[in-house]
Amino acid sequence: MESRPDPLRWCWFALGGRLPSRYRSWVLYDATCPTWRLRHFVRAFVQVCAIATPLVMFLPGPVWVRASAVLLGLLVGLQYALWFMDGAVDRRVARAGYPEGAASAERRRLHAKDDAAAAARYAATWRRGEVSGGDPANTPTHAPSTGRTG
Image (cartoon, rainbow, N blue to C red; front, side, top):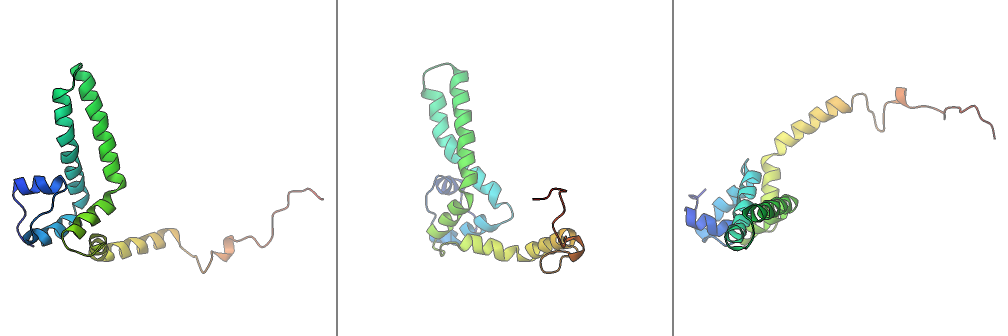
């Protein structure tokens, strides 16, 4: 991995700009490291703050109204960041020169063993005795009688 960008370039990157090609491997690392979700939210927070700061400073009205409006806008912005996280991160990586979906594929590759172990734990806990469609001992052979006829 190349060195990370300096703070000014990182701010440019956080606001949606492209980094020089020498940071290409860092962009992939940023999108696939264990803290990639946190990094995405920090970038989203920087984007929202770039809009919110001038609004709080220059809009007329009481400070509490401006601050409340900006806080609600921040919450909505971070909610959108959550909804579109995977696609946004994949697009960032694609803009760095990787194929579309490279970040998601790399994360799946990096976590394949952990995912397989989790699936095995799940199967051991919740699928005990299940043989092709369920446990025959717990499967009724006929519908229960309701006592009604006709």
